[in-house]
Image 1 (cartoon, one colour):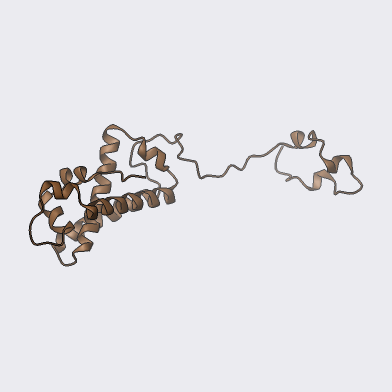
Image 2 (image 1 turned 90 degrees about the vertical axis):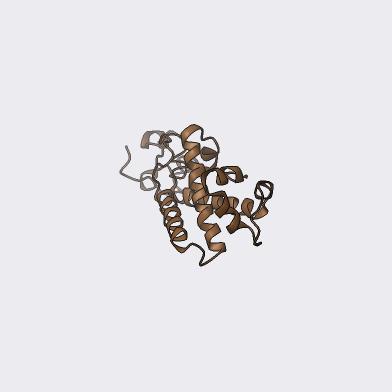
Amino acid sequence: MAAYASITDLITRRDKRTVGELAFDTDEPPTDAELLASTNLSAILEDASGQVEAAMLCGKRYLPADLAALTGNSQAFLKKVVCTIAMADLFERRPGYHIEQAQAYAAQAKGYLEDLRTGKNLFNMSDNSAANAAIASTEGPTVVEYTELNLLPNQMMRHFPNWDTRLPTDRS
């Protein structure tokens, strides 16, 4: 799956010069075309998107299809989250470079990921949209439904335990 934010989103939301310095291993500042064609930036954005998905699946609120279907302000916020995580990863590429900025991005990225891991509703989606997809259902048949199934143990009572000893007693 593609990243939730593109290189254009990253250089629109963050300082293009800083992104270029962090993403390239040369002393010359990259051109816009070099930035847009950068495999380093593509990989960083895919990694950031993967971190968002991993945290989101731990939180059990969203599914990847939910994030792909976002529109409007929620989609813009998702791009901001991915770009923030990508910037934190870019600063990890250059340890010791702008330490205060690196720490600020790392703290903000950690906060976003923690919110997703704990299941907070960051993207304004309703809870009925697949938010409870990973929660198992504990409902089953009632006693009346179970006895009307005409199962093999009901037909061969001498060979199986009585049906009332097999069904939980707290259901009615």
